[in-house]
Image (cartoon, rainbow, N blue to C red; front, side, top):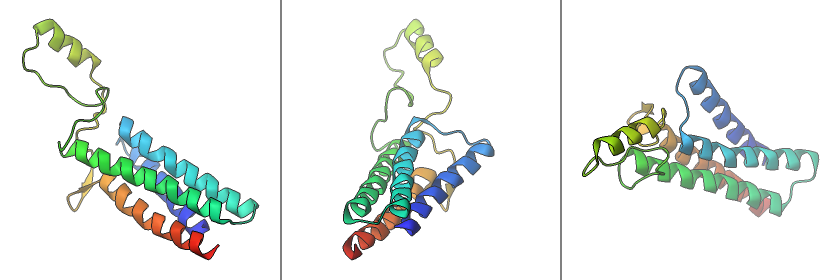
Amino acid sequence: MLLAAAGSAGLLLAALVFQAFGIEPCKLCWWQRYPHYAAVAVGVLALVWRPSVLLAWSGAAAVAATAAIGIYHTGVERKFWAGPDTCTAGALNGQSAQDLLSQIMAAPLIRCDEVAWALFGISMPSWNAIASLGLMAIWVAAARRA
């Protein structure tokens, strides 16, 4: 359990490093962090309390949630589906000049539908999903042993 919780802590630390280098998180990036915080908290509980099946499954659920959000975010970046209105660009068709100006003024500075950084063609939310699925396997293994 501690290994999986440390993995979530490492992913959170990596996100903070990217942020320190100027890659600001969008709304969906923030959403992906929250389940990692929960997984770290579960790991701390397992450390100060005794590890249990309930804690292990809780950790697995947390990283499964962040993996799901990462997959959703990847789909938004790749334009497979629309993201939240508060973090993506809308269509321009049929809008008046005033509507278009209002949309521009309300547009977020950090958009969810643009890839901020990628390695080997895989964006940060995709890497988060991949790593989180690996962490989920560790949590599930811990649950089976507990």
